[in-house]
Length: 189
Image 1: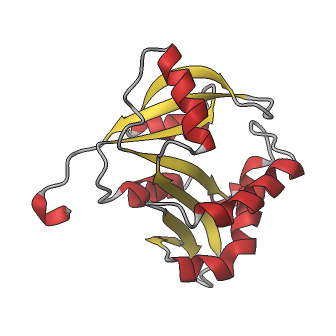
Image 2: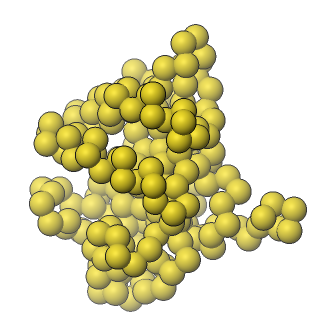
Image 3: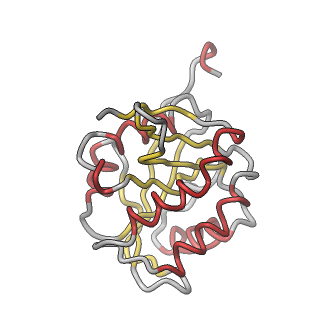
């Protein structure tokens, strides 16, 4: 079986909402993430708000046979006033990595169903999400430690900006990673 990776519009996301939540649950409930149902429910509650955020982009891996979502990623413009921005800004200031958040794109989530992992889908999702965005840099948080996700990001040029980020209400530590993006030429803007 093959998967096609493409950007989805809001109209294409909404009918797939329940499946996207299921993919998130399947990807993040097992080790090393060990997310409980309460965190899955939080994701389901916050995703509709994120769909309305400035700069929102969503890419999905769709099973060729039936167009069912087997992986996704999304991001948005990183802006003051967002909870994530505030938490990350404080951590970056403590590590002298200030300035990363200005004019940046936040990769919010990436999830691939375990049965589809190890096929390059995460990398294809990553590349599609960042393709053609007009920001000088991107940021994300991922589980602190060496995971498949952090390896994927490192292999694509992301650098660790801070480690040991503790987010209020969450029991695991995260690392903040940043990526300098190539400038877009006039034809790509």
